[in-house]
Image 1 (cartoon, rainbow, N blue to C red):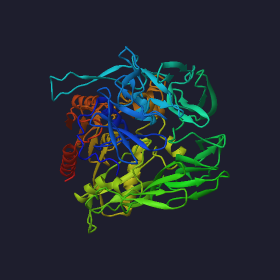
Image 2: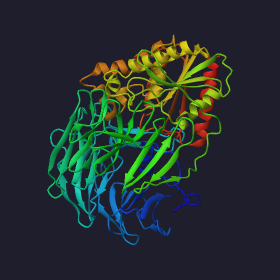
Image 3: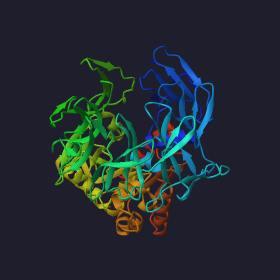
Image 4: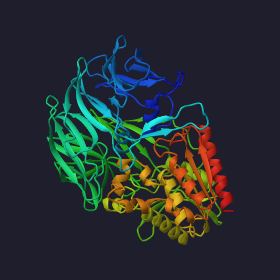
Length: 625
């Protein structure tokens, strides 16, 4: 241990840090993120609003002089200085002198931060990147002036003014993002021409051994282009383009360089494949999830050999593969300097961590994680005509008698729940212990099964995912007599909340009660990058939005429905629940609404999270009694 956050005063989080944690889905306290210098000798992070720098060798701790707000600190290569974002400015400090590098008087312009859709949907939470040689960096200049202004109110405190946010709803304007080369002494020196006349989204920026790369997309996301940028002139040259008639997925860790060729991931035929120089090298049996690193001639990736797992795999120049972790679990990894750090989970036990050194030895890292406190034992099955992957959880020691069924899906694009990860089922198992047979099913749209399976939801986010939940439920019910299909509830959060409400609205013959947490109810109210990827632009495809909306189905409700929503949610805003509730009321349909004051899209408050489980359990047991 080089620093213990436990005795430190964590203090009040800044708005920027709170937003970053929301985008990254971080719920912990203490040190939740950090950055090291190139050699890993010094670590910087924010704790209690203050910028800390720790020397790894001797544990010496410095609290550096900064402005009041500190966000995303990054050490300057080769110096003692640390750059960071403060409000809308980029600043630098050496612990003695703190100063502005670049800022803007316009309140709609910020430097060094990722815009909303980049952080929420593209996986890019950063807005400035150091040149590895030091003294200069590339920084994003983000102008949100063209984005509609929405307001997040605090109804529990009428004296608190509503908080404005700039939310890019589907079909509306995105932020204008520029890239500038910035000198740490002289400020902005060169604008980089990454957008041209074609691209709207800056997906990633990388300094590599071969120079500066930008990964960009047009608004329809039907292509992803890798640009090589001359940092001195700002000129951008296209290196590689990947295209698809529906959308191109952004893959973590890609691109990389290997012996002068670009390492990317592309969808071809039945698989998501590793590609070298634009040529796919892996076969149909692998669905590549991420690129971990390049080790000489080999590329390290994580990939699914079957939908429930993730294996760390070494891919040789001829496409030959070697598994580095077990296939009956879920492993991820990081790679640098010849050292591989592997995190492995399984459906049976706790998550483990291991460092694999370049001399072939391995060192385990002791886990400090608490155990769930009750047995968590999913039973996996593949059912139905579309071979739906699912997990079944029963009460510990169940005697085989009939149980009410609780479907517990996410069920939407870009996320899987049926994985060989024990802790991913902790909440589902808790519900099972309350007297349910809990079913978690991944239908069309979810990853791990190949590009075609994911793209079957294009143009319709409602019917395919609902049909697959029904198929999974009925197929499993035919095999397992302990599932009482006359008492079926469904619960979910976010897309899962949308799916839960959809289920009781459209198929009350199958689903008898629902709890919908933070549901998207009208896709025109959700953000550009996610929504338009699957439904297209609402001006071009209004029928896609109409068929995926819950509002036209409000008059059909005749089952118990509980809607839960955090009033401080800036991702799926509370308007989603309120417009559905209004439509239900206008149709004379009784329902329950549970507003959560001060709660965002997550529920990190421990008491709120715990009591929410009890309220959902009681509602469902009463509705299915």
